[in-house]
Image (cartoon, rainbow, N blue to C red; front, side, top):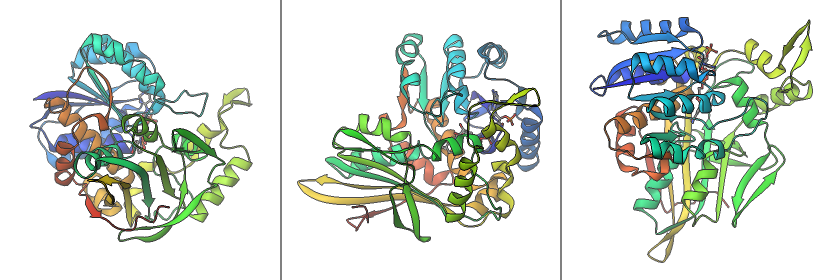
Length: 402
Ligand code: NDP
């Protein structure tokens, strides 16, 4: 039995804590630590009411300060730290794991607070130091990034000699009844979706204006939804780990209402990350906006509909072109009934638990810093079906992705 320290008590942290508590055979002792301890306590109480057994431990932690994380690790002595706080905390938490010799896992790559830019270079730079320390960091083990990389690795392993075209298609066809809300941390979400579009083609990155390229894509059990080409972090590692890719793109659905709100937010300066002085205090407009928007974990109760995330792949097998589509649909209501939060948090938290489980069982192991597609996808795919995210596949169909 292993000990795990989960950092971050938002929507995703809640799901990770629930799912780890369901598997006491692997996660023998669980601690949930975050900036606001009462959020950890509320989650611990809810899990205790639902599953009984030993209560999960909680602690207050500001993970911006590695010395605080080091002290907590030294006290609790976890085998693994699951970081589901914000991308800003990735490096300080990786530093703390390096100092104490503890394995690390996260679901989103590092972003500096003052530049809205995400890339793996900062975290890949830890590779040698993690190797020397004999520990493992698993990066981007949510759904996207995460399962999308595992789906790609599974396709490459079983169905193709070479994969040439990859389109990751991500629909949230749910309805939460709010005029405007984001499904995960509003600050991170708005930074992500207002970036310039970017995709990989013929050995180079092609950039576009934000939301300039779109298409109506049919999603299983959902139907057609307008989907916009955006840049997403897993593209960076996937084109590196699958060099046969001629093109790799990421598509996400946004409703007209969401985009209209987003445009207004940008036009009036509320998406800015430049601090302004207000009544003698420096505030960041986007952080202030986050404080007034509904927290993602509050959306669950009235959320209906599904998310649908998958990979549409074209490549060559035995000299013949073939196509493959693998996806998961997740119900917001079912996610809420199980964990008290909606499907976007659920689809992130479940893969984080599965990655942690495979690491703690030594099924996925290594020394250094890794992306998920570098490991054998089969045991992960098996667990997705067992742990609440069943997947489906279709072969030799029209992928609709010219
Ligand atoms: P939330 O904003 O709901 O939760 C973040 C939590 O982290 C909060 O509890 C917050 O504390 C805590 N936190 C923030 N700063 C610190 C700090 N310095 N020290 C300790 N705790 C801190 O976000 P989500 O749960 O929606 O998202 C969590 C992570 O998951 C994000 O990194 C996000 O990018 C990632 N994600 C990944 C996805 C994927 O598929 N790969 C999809 C969706 C999200 P407080 O409550 O005090 O604010």
